[in-house]
Every structure is written in structure tokens, then in C-alpha cells.
Amino acid sequence: MRRDEEKGEAAVFQRVVLKNASPYHYMKVCLVLEDESTKLSAVELKQFIITGLKTLYGEVGAALNFDLLKYDEDTFTAVLRVYSKWLVKLWSSLTLNGFYQNQACAFRVLQVSPFLLALSGNSRELQLD
Amino acid sequence: MSSGWRWRDLPSGVKFCGRKFSRKKSGTAMVRVKARYLLCELNVSDRTQLLLLDDRAVLAAVKTAVARIHGDYGAALCSMRFSIKYLNAHTGIVFLRFLRRAYKLLWSALPFITSIDARGHKIPCFLNCLHVGGTIRTCQKFLVRYNTQQLHRMLPKCRNEEEKQEVRKAILNCSLTKGNNEEFHIESESEEDEEAQS
Amino acid sequence: MSVFVDLNLSYTADNNRLRALIETAAHLGFSTVAINYVFEPTTKKKQEIPAPKPISALIDHLPIVQGRSRPITVLNRLTVVMSDSSHFRPNAAEYRGFDLLAVYPTTEKLFHSACMLLDIDIIVISVTEKLPFFFKRAPVNGAVDRGVVFEVCYSAAIRDSTMRRYTIANALSLMETCKGKSVILSSAAEKALELRGPYDVINLGRLFGLSDADAKEALSSTCRSVLLHAETRKTASGIVYTRRSCQEDSPQPDLCDAPAAKRPHLAE
Image (cartoon, rainbow over all chains, first blue to last red; front, side, top):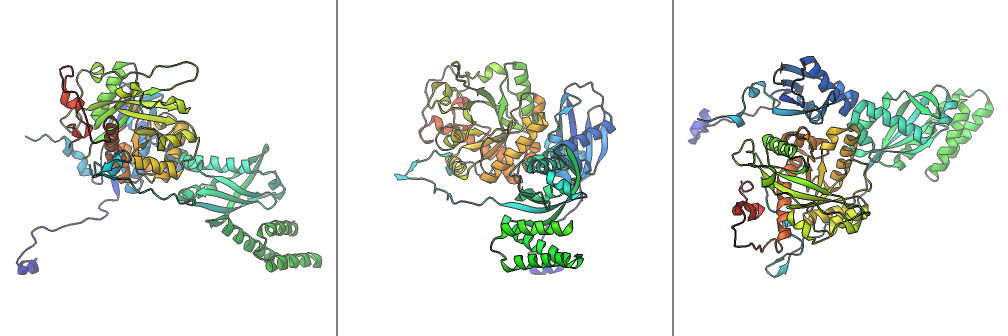
């Protein structure tokens, strides 16, 4: 910093680049079901996601590691954690999941971020006063 | 939104400033479709069962294994330009052709093949990949060299002088006319190969 | 944040379902959608080309797109299933009512003529069957030069496992030929639950062999150039444009008659 000051034009901003800040990606997903009265526990949800992975990516996909960190049974909203390397696989299998026990369903991916903190709020829905 | 408007949004032959504007025709040069050829060896416990095999049985076995290991995505990749190029039922040599961008993924499913259904028989076997090449020619060259090596290894194991002479002759044969008529020599060597083993 | 477009929502006679489709699309963040009317000519009897219903008859007020303050734009599109070259009638008056024109060629010869000759905007790639022909470089390049794009629909992949294999395989072989450029991804959804969000579809593009940037283009700027290309069909070489000066019968003359480029949602 001192050297910068000596130059006269001091650098006011410092640029910090973080590479591979987090090995994981976090996803906030919401399951939309045709029949909204269906009950789904956390275990059943994870099982359902694994089944989807298995149909699209086979046994290799079923062995993929991901965690269900938080799940709200009332709104069917869940937070998933997955290694960044497998994000594309997990996400595409969620997208192509179309049926849960013979009823139509869809996963809406609300947010994806390498930082869990980012999922606490959504800047796109921010209401500015 | 980056470039909203492009030249190709216009119908062809639009006149600009009195000059006919047309895009340069892109070259229609032939581009070779790239593939990977896997040279695999079928290992079975009972060698007589090898003769039951045919192209379709191996094809189906590979396809089911890929579908099981890599799911729908793998099956989709496996349906593109996948074929059995050559199958030698005597020696159990198979040439598999894969799409080049996906060959590693498809290759990873091959070790999971434990049996092949052929003509109502279930043949327990496994595939051993010997060589990966970009063309059939390189695979063939490798196969000739590999089979010569096998003959060399067989030489000390011979039980009597007659067999020894035969193997020597075979080695001499393929080292003399190497590279001339490879297809023929693969066949002849392979048969020698089997004879000496049984 | 770019403007996302879904150029294929299947038309159903059921108004409620269509309304639900449009509302879901707006909720997911699509700024423009097109309702797709499929016309499949058969040799036995003469069929009428379906007439597009005016959007105002389908839905009273258009829902607001999520994340912006404008209502969604709804267009009409006709897909002609071609199994014979006589099925597509150039300059037919019935085609005028549609904003977009697409064909679904079923043979290699028809694919070639669709790429090189026909005055259309979109060529639909089959996703429900094994590819009946290989994509050749020459016609695909011709189509790219003319501004005609290829469409891959993903809702069949959601419905069925076999269709999923065909969708992935056909999409991959298309991407190999056209290198990811001038391709659009659309839903062809019949139900609201078959629609997916734009970022989900971009991720799905990875599965179809598109790069991230190409996949995003497939939903935004390529679609926009399709809309502009469709606009040129109505005009003289895309340069001269005439319109009637009496405007008393059209409720919103600015929105309906201006070229797509000048419409407010696309000007962003």
C-alpha cells in the first residue's frame, strides 16, 4: 500500500479473487406436485431424487453423493448440497424428473450458489423502499 | 442480449448500396467422422463356447451393460454410431466402434459385462481391452504385433518338436511378409494360436 | 439477465389449461411464448389449416413476467408436419395469420428442401423416434446461412424414458453438425408441469452437447433472431414495411403492428 501512495495515484480498491472458494454447490429447490395434498417426507424425497438420477445416469449416477440439508414438508422446499463437479448431473436429472408415483410433478430450482449464505435471500425479489 | 441483429437475419440476396450482398458459401469439404476403435479380447473359461457368439449377441450385451451403468444418457450415447466392426469367434477378438467424444464413458461400462447371451446359452465371460485406436488400421497393426508376441511366448511351452516347428514357421511367416496382407495373416495366425493352445 | 423465450407451447382446445401454461411460463420468467398449432396433412382427406385464435380471446389480461414489469407476449405459430413435398404450400393465405412458421420434415429429401428452399423460420427435429436420416453438413450450413433455426423440444424427454434416449441422441447428433449455433430449445409442453425454468433448460443444454454460452443463446438471442426472421417474411426483404393507416379496429396498434424489434419487451 505504501508503495502505491508513493506513486501518487493510490489504488483505492483492492481486487480479491477467490478461486475454488467452495468445493460444494448449494441448491434450493421446490417440488411442485399435481395433487398438492400428497405428503412427502425427507427420506422419500431423497429416494425420489436418487431414482431420477438412476434412470438418467444409471448406477454411476445413483452412487453420486449429495446431501439433503434442510427440507420443509409443507412447502416441499429443500436445500441440497452437491460437489460442484456433479452439479450439472444432479440438476439435469432434477429437470427431467416428470412423475412421482404416476402423478405429474416438476422441480423448480429456485437458487443455485456455491455459498450457503446466499440462499438466505434472493436479490431478484428484493423489495426496495 | 448481445448481438441482436445479424447478417443471417436477412433473407438471402438482399441488395445493399446497389451491390448484391451475399454471405460467403461455407466450404463443403468432406470432414472425416472421428471415432474410436476398441480392440477387446473376450475371455471365457470354456473356449468352445466362443463359437456360439455372433455380432448381435455382443452388441446387445454391451448395450445392456451401458444402459445399466450409465442410464438413459449412456444408452443415448451408445446408440450413436456404435457398432461391432469385427468379431473373430475363433479367438474371441472384437473391434468395437464408439463415438469419439464419449468413448471413455462407454469404455467404463465394459468391465461390468459378466456374461453374454448367445443362441439361448449364457456364456460367462469378460472383456479385456487390449488397444484403443483412432482407425481400424492401427488396431490391426497392433493385433498382428500382439499375436506375434503370443506366438513367441508359446514357443518354450511346446511339448514336442513337431509343434515347435509349426510355431517357428508361423513366426517366420508373419515376420517376413509383415504389413503386406495383414487381414489374411491375422486369420492364419489366430488359427495357429488356437491350435497350439489346445 | 437476458430475455428468455419459449417458442413452443402446444395448443389445446382446453382454454383453462392453455391459460395455466401461459401463467406458468410467465411465472418461470419467459418474456415471450408462442402457442403452437400442429397441422398434419394426410393424403386421404383434405384438411383445413387451423386458424389461430386471437390471444385476447384466450386470456383476458396477460400475466406479468417474473422479475420485470411487463406482461408476457404471446405469439402464434404453425408447425406443418411434412411427409410429402406437396404438404407445404408456399404463400398460402392461411399461413399469414401466424407469427412463426415451422416445419417438421420426416425424410432426408424434405429436410434438405426445408433447409435450402422453403420460406420458414424453424425446422423441428424429431425427438420421439430414432433419427430417420443423418444430418449432413451442406443443408445444415445452408439453413444457418439463411437464418433458419433448428428446434429441439424437451418435454418428450420428461414424459418417457425411451423418448429421453432419442431426444439426447438426436440432439447430440444435431449439435455435432451445426456446432451449437442456431439451435433453439423449447418445451412443447402440454401441461403446466412439463414446463421448466429457463436456467434449468440451459443446464439441460449441457446434456444435449451445448456449451453454457450456446445454451443460453438457444433460449434468448437465437430466439430473438428467429422472431426478426419471421418479421422479414411479411416485409420486403426486411427493409420496407407497409402498414394500414386506419387503425380503429385494432385495440393496441402500437403493440400489434410494430415489428418485433420495436416491441417494448424486446427493446430491452
